Length: 227
Picture 1 (cartoon, rainbow, N blue to C red):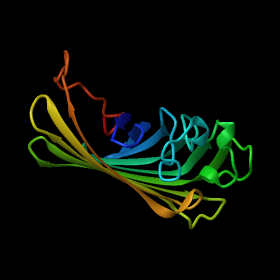
Picture 2: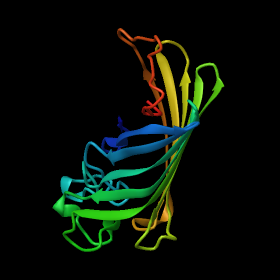
Picture 3: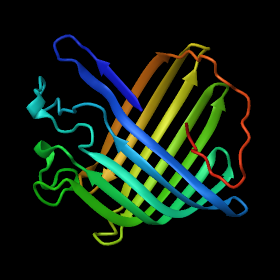
Picture 4: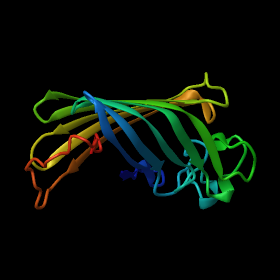
């Protein structure tokens, strides 16, 4: 989850970041590093979103997004491959993708892939492939990459949704950290062009009562890959 604001002279306070991303994957071992697995991912945001290029000083009625408008839920069954702790591949030949637009103001045909005015939920059935890789570049410097593909079996399976998320985490000392992120999204049902977002954040971190002792893990379970 993340949320950030910026205030600049001559313009209203604007969001720099606003997302909810909850995901997990669990499975039963069926071979060396292979698991029969099931999991889900939920995506949305906390507050109203605006197109500041079109409306530099927006009102509530100018909103283009909000919590659960849109909201996304991916869930399915498939196979996971976990050869190392920092690498994971998930393939789900049976995966449901659900798009929620629960704000009537935003329920317009063509927006977020909606097929007609007043539609609140769009359901898709297809295949999903997800790759996660975490690399340690240097002491306290990590790069996390996540690449996701989804193809709708019924409606234009050749139009593959592509979502990439890359994060560079740098810890300078016990208190100060920096995060540089790059997000790329292509979804023909929403916008035919590639969407891109870059962010840089610096913050303070303080752990209270953190337990750094390794926890026992069951060989039969896949736990959430990236915290």
